[in-house]
Image (cartoon, rainbow, N blue to C red; front, side, top):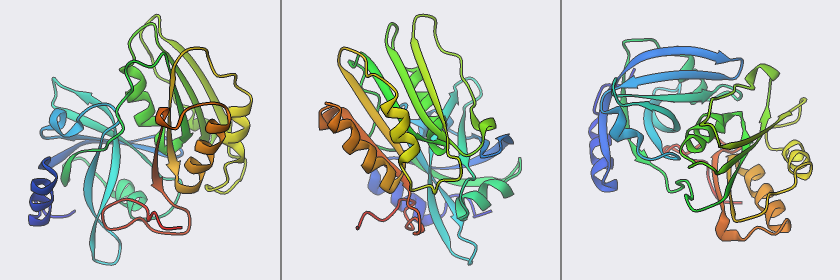
Length: 256
């Protein structure tokens, strides 16, 4: 594991006006065939930020070089001062190997909170579209919706056992559509397009959050524009890009 509080992390946090912390791994467990949960202790509440935020973790890229990977926060326990991450293992890379190798007692170099897509509180309904890599952050955001709001999930899964559920407040309307990837490539939007086509958007003002593969989230944005949503009510975040490793900052390249 990388040394705690690497100087570059402290410098980065200073520039971004966020925190750099050493966090102990409290728990590492397999949730499903495609998801690993990691629970971190050490200023967890402050690092987690608001629902929709992520943290940057320093990992070894497997070639002896330290890079950063960004993980959306799934949950926060203020009493224990911990935050939890749901990390996808559906495609090979530093993030997958990092999560699989973690063990309680490891110390991680963490910078956060990061991210510019919070929940749109005034919206009447919230549509969460993406693959299993986004399930954890989708649930955290949905838990912050005020009753009698509505949360709609259209999520593509690599394995039926990845269909993890969550408990929400009484009075919150919840609709979940889980789509079987059925062997399609991670950058094939066909499954999510079919899931969206099968659903009638509710009345009222809504907001869509598209998280997942680079090309897929852009295709889904176009589909929602065609369905009548305004661009200001669609937020998208690419977690990864098929065929290209994420950059040293943990994000996929944005060039065509």
